[in-house]
Length: 237
Image (cartoon, rainbow, N blue to C red; front, side):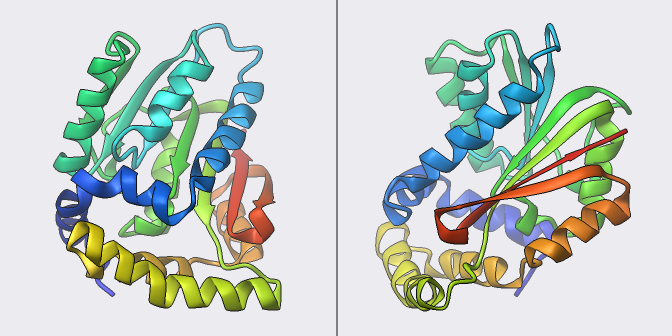
């Protein structure tokens, strides 16, 4: 499974036009609920911040970026991604929603974020950490750009622990998802890649330990939909 940033960016450029539609179809729109719940927790963490600065890493087509902007109306949001194709769609979406005064984008890998130290009150990453070419470096970069007391929120797909749910999950992700993805996007390899990255993502206790090893504090996580998705929350002290 290739994990270099050039290959990943090219793959996401290819699937950008159908990315959102396929995500919603393949998850039966449950991904929208996961994002809403995560953004709700993000908003709660910023209750005492008057004009928060938020970074959306691996923002893609700005699904989460827009949701953050609509939910936290006093925030300024910055989205970064490595895919020109995804960013182009995100910028057009934001323009149509007339949110360009509060949302801005730039092309930047998670491993080399083009912002100064201690810039953001919170960083949000939805379904992006598994695509980092260097996970430890990317998470370390996020800590660098977080302000002291700032929070990291990572929303990520996960293999469920329940035996029956896991059997159904494997059936769907390994067989049905790549087939539908290829039919609708013409890029079945991208959806096989999706399954592989979820499969190789650290288990919750391992990912929590990784965050702690980097230096994050107060690390916790919440499982959604029988463990199909998990939200990790951590703080920079």
